[in-house]
Image: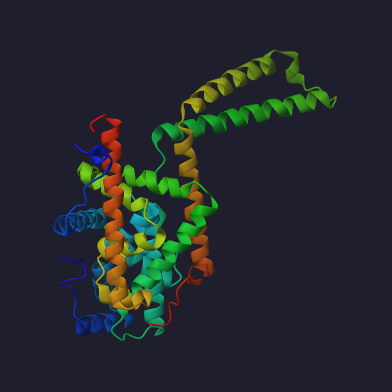
Amino acid sequence: MNKNDHNQTPEPSHDAISAEIRAIESGLDEIGCALRSNPDAGFESRIALNALRESEGSPSLRITGRPDVYVSPGRGRLAARLAAALLIAGAGIGLAWTWLSGTRPAITDDTSGIQMASATDAEIAEIADAWDVLDDSELAGWVDDVSSRVTMVSDSSSGAWISSWLDEDSM
Amino acid sequence: MRASDGESTGADLGALLSAASAGDESAWESLVRLYARRIFALARSRCGSDDAAEEITQSVFVTVATKVREGVYTEQGKFEAWLFRVAMNRVRDAIRKNRRRKELHDRGAEAERTAAPNERETSDDLAALRGAILRLSEPDREIIELRHHAGMGFKEMAELLGEPIGTLLARHHRALRKLRDLLATTVDRDLEGTGGR
């Protein structure tokens, strides 16, 4: 065997290349077919209805109408607990502010304020633990997705969609 | 078979457009049914997200509904090219906005890998092909996606892109050869990775 043989890939024949390219074309068509069958059965009706509504100036139903846009129960509970913790923390800060500004409220004579602060710390620590478990990239993606959708809706309503790369009125 | 094959003839399409512009909702739905999935496929392929693809599809049809009803668009046998021109503009707008936030191109690639269930069932070959498409240059990728994902014919692509059919055929063939080369490189790398030379 020539010592250079293993470094040289033999050139495939024209027929072999044509066959490979045909196979690639067929694979591409298959991917296209899969992409076109992605949307659910109500896709067309949703698009038709929402596009008509929006073109008539009525608000679109697209965000609430899509079945896969929802807040998971876990996230919902987390948000509710976070809101509760912020409420309690806010009350604690208000109490502290009142104390520091010299108008000591009567309730500071008992330990309820201290108990409340302790409960807040525990609550925040618990939420912080839960927050650490969250997948940051997923959350960031979700936030990004929402902001992107808001931008698109806002742009759509302000007419910026018509800013074109290709002239849309020429055909 | 192309997705555009077997669709309405020009006369049918003209009648559908007239009826839709006159407020016939069933004509409008037929129009959406003819093209919505093809626009979705193009947008999904470029943006990598079902939600973004649906938003884009909807915004395309908002434009169509508005312009057809206002009489801005007059059918001259180029409806498909015009429709996909609007779609391409929406897709480009979305990509431009996504790039502003930097990570979305990667998200597109990631979404390609974590595609919808029916896509996950595709073979390794198709997964490799999907990966190779992402590595194509922008013009090559555009022509592949218009042809195979949006299911456009070369005549409509020529009208859309304003290039002669011969040029598009050559561009398409070149893009296919690049895909072939990219796939061959991937196979070579895999063989090296497994020590199977």
